[in-house]
Length: 165
Image (cartoon, rainbow, N blue to C red; front, side):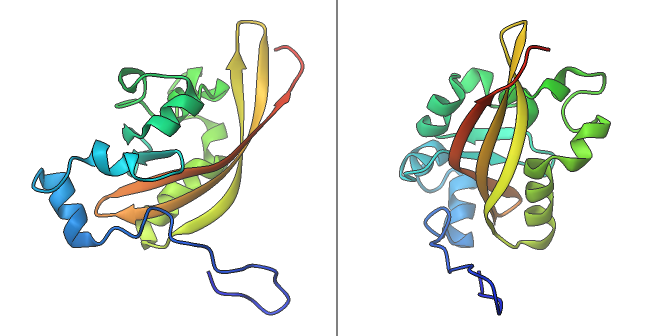
């Protein structure tokens, strides 16, 4: 990330070890190490998503943050995985009026379309917490495109309790 005049932005380290396209092709084709093994070498929580934010894989650190096994993560949309309250509305994750402003969805779409990595983007989700309450979660996310997928890194998670629904 380049520094603008008057900006405090600093160059950030590579998001996912800077996997090259040749190695990425090997991972996806099954020639190199399995994608799950590669994801475990990344120290931060990372989920791999397609252009519609459907999760294809998640490392163990991401599984711990989400509190879910791979069978409850892989193949689900991001809002379903993070338990966004809007993902339960008609149409589901990515298909409601609220989804247009979703920072995660927008970051993935921008990175997928442009190939440009985004670093430490603030994202806020209102998530279910039991039947009668919800939590407002603050995330810092980073994205990097690898082939036709986007690596979504969760840099920081903060929670703030909100009033019951």
